[in-house]
Length: 179
Image (cartoon, rainbow, N blue to C red; front, side, top):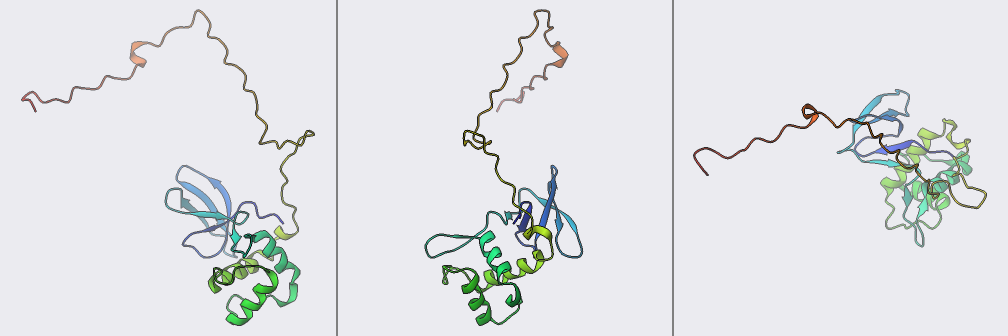
């Protein structure tokens, strides 16, 4: 299952695909039928990647990927997000065994089920998640420290920057009358 680039945005319903980033924020495209593109402000908007979301568990937290995989395995009897609360709780006990029933609210269950209904038509469940590259020595590619080439020495005939290239000096801000 490949959920890389799929995010939930705080304050907005539904799921979004991360298309890119500019200096103003993240460029997102909605996963619903409208395919609306928005720019989410970097400083005020919180994004949560579906790969990183977990569900409270009694012993350990459950990854959303595992819960969604269990929902896919449950195929026919997935309730609607607007279904009865008792049906949702019984279904969630089936697909997320060991979740903390006090900390996982009905609204969380509804959100996860609605996310599943948005994602089920996409090819995300059949795609393989990208694996981290592991070297022959068993070392992850990101753990390897790359040696940067040393800076080349400047030639002896290099010119110093001209005075006009220097930044202007700050003006003295004291008043003539005194402070």
